[in-house]
Amino acid sequence: MNEGLKVELRDYLGAPHQADILIVDDTIENLWLLTNILEEQGYEVRKAISGSSALMAVQAAIPDLILLDICMPDMDGYTLCQQIKSIPESADVPVIFLSALHEALDKVKAFSIGGADYITKPFQAAEVLVRTRNQLMIRQAMKAVQHMNLRLESQIQERTRALEIANQRLMEIAYYDNLTGLPNRALFTECLARSLEAVQADPDYRFAVLFVDCDRFKLINDSFGHLVGDEVLAKIAQRLATVLNSDDVLARFGGDEFVILLRQVDNTKAAIAVADRLIEAMKPSIPLPHLEVFITTSIGIVISNPIEHQKSEHILRDADIAMYSAKANGKDRYCVFTPMMQRASLERFQVETDLHRALDHGEFVPFYQPIVNLKTSAVVGLEVLIRWQHPEQGLILPHAFISVAEETGLIIPIGKALLDQACRHFAEWRSHQVVDDQFFISFNLSACQIAQASLPQCLQHTLAQHQLSPHHLRLEITETTLLNNSLAIAVITQLAQQGMHLCIDDFGIGYSSLSYLHQFPVKTVKIDRSFIQLIASEPHKLQIVKAILGIVDALNMTAVAEGIETREQLMSLEKMNCELGQGYLFSKPVSADITTHLLKTQIQCLQ
Ligand code: C2E
Ligand code: CA
Ligand code: CA
Image (tube, rainbow, N blue to C red; front, side, top):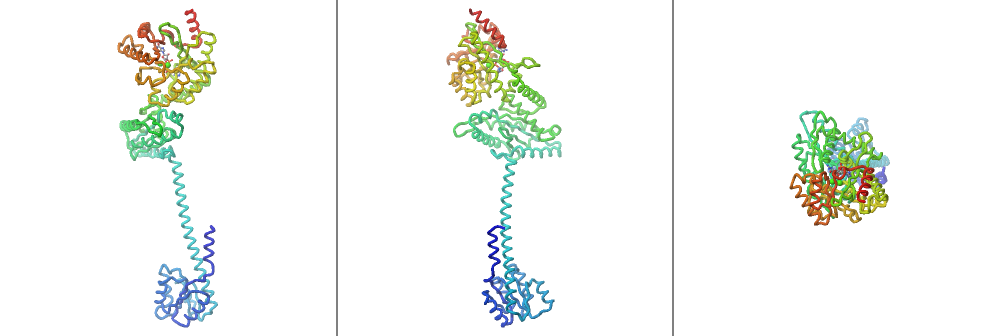
C-alpha cells in the first residue's frame, strides 16, 4: 500500500468526533436522554419523533448513524429502516435499533432488514456509547475501504492505460518501420500469408506483389551520410504511397527496399500499370535543404500462383528475382517474373560464389590492348582489360562476370587488385625502359567504383606504391555513370584536380550528348567501336564520327577510336585526323608477358 493511502486510512480510522447522529423515537424522554448522552461526547445530534419526519431528516442530510426505535405509531422502525436502506444514498448508513422488545425473533428481523446493531431498552448510557462508537468506526472503516477501492481502481485504470500505450508502442516497434512509419517485413509477411490463405479458399483469386528497390541508393548514403539518406528514404516512401490505394500494403523491408501487396490486382497488365505509375512518381527530383537528388527504382512484379506460391517466402523470392532482372536490364524499370529468371538467378548466385573464390585465389589478371598513335603507329598507352583465369574453364571474358561483380560490389576489391597488378607491370616496363615517361595505362571504372568517396585517395596510394604519377593513369568511365549523377561528377572532379586523366568510354552510344562534354573535366573521348566498324559501310556513321572529332578538337580534347579492325577503317580515321586508336588491327588484348614482348619489339622497330 502506498504512503498516501496509509495516511488517508489512518484519518478515516481515527476517533469519529464529528459524527452526525439521527435519533428516531416517539418517546420524548428517550429522545432527550439519548441526545444528552451523545452530545456530551461531542456528537452532532438530530432528532425525529416519527418515521415520516425521520425520512425527511435523512433526505435533507445523510446522517452517519441512526438510532431507531422499533415501536412507533405512524411507521414502525422496521418499515422506516427498509425505506432508508432502499434509498441508494442512505443505504450504507448504520441503523441501531432501540426497543423494549427482546424476543429473538425481533432481533433476527432487525438484522435481516439491514440493522447494524440492537440495543434493548431500558438502555445504559455506556452501552449506547460503545455500540454507537463501534458502528461509527465500522462505517468509517468501510468508507475508507471504499475510498481506497476507488483510488485503487483509478490507479489500475491508469496502469492499464499505460500498459496499453506500451503495448501499442511494442506493436509499432514489432510491426512498423521506425523511419517511414510503414509496415515492416513482419507485418507485410502476415498480410501476405492472409492473401495466400485467400487463394487456398478460392483457387481463382489472384493478387500481385511488387518488389521495389532504389537504384544506386548507396551513393546517397556514402556521399551525404545516413541522415540525408534517411530523409530521402522517408520522401521515397511518401511518393510511393501516393500511387497506391487504401487496400494495398506498402512496406519497407529495410535499407532501400520497399515491397507492395496489391490485393485487388489479379493480372500482369494491371500490375504493370501500377509499376509504371510508381516509376513515374519517382521522376521529379527529391528536394533536400541544400541539394536535390534524383532517384530511380527497379521493380520486380509477380502475380500469385496457387501452385508455386505456397508460402510468403516463395512469392517474395520471385518478386526479388524479378527486381534483380530489372536491375540487370538497366535499372529504372520493372520486370515481370518468369520461371526462366529463376534459373538465371541461380546461375548468378553461382557466379557470385565463384567470384569470391576467384578473388581470394588471385584468378583475375590484367590483359592489355595497345593504344596507338594513328600517325606514327607508336604504342602510347595500354588499356587494361580484366580476364578471369578460371582453373577449369580457362580464360573468361568480362561480359560473363562484370555485371555480377558490379551488382555485388565485388568489382571494388577486384578492381583494386587488378590496378595493383597493372601498376606493378607498368613499373617493371618503366624500369626496363620499354616505355617512356609519357606512356600511360588506361583503366576502366564502373559506376559503383566511381561512387566511392575513398577512390581518389585509394588510386593515389596505389600509384605511389609503384612510384607512378597521376599522369601515368587514365580512367575510363561511361557517360551513363555521369548522367544526372552529381555524386559521380564530384568524385571525378576531385580525381581531375589530382592530375588524373579522365576519358569518356563508349562515346556515341546511350545518352551521348556532345553538348555537355565540356562540363566535365574530361580530356579524352573514346569513340565506340560500333561507329568505327561501320564507317566504311554506313556513310552517316562516318558523318557522326566526323562531328564527334570536330567537337573533340574544338574542346581541345583527344579522341581514341575503338575497335579498329581493318586498314580501311584506319585510313578513314587518319584522314579525319583522329589522333589515337585501338583495335584488333594492332593487337587483341594480350597477357602481360606478350605485352612485354610487344613493347620490346616496338622499340626495336623504332630503333
Ligand atoms: P570496353 O571498355 O569498351 O573495352 C573494349 C572492349 O572491346 C574489350 O572487350 C576489347 O577486347 C574489345 N575490343 C578491342 N578492340 C576490338 C576490336 O577491334 N574489335 C572488337 N570486336 N572488339 C574489340 P573486353 O575485354 O571483353 O571488355 C568488355 C568490357 O568489359 C569493357 O568494354 C569494359 O566495359 C569492361 N571491362 C573490362 N575490363 C574491366 C575492368 O577492369 N573494370 C571494369 N569496371 N570494367 C572492365
Ligand atoms: Ca574501356
Ligand atoms: Ca570502350
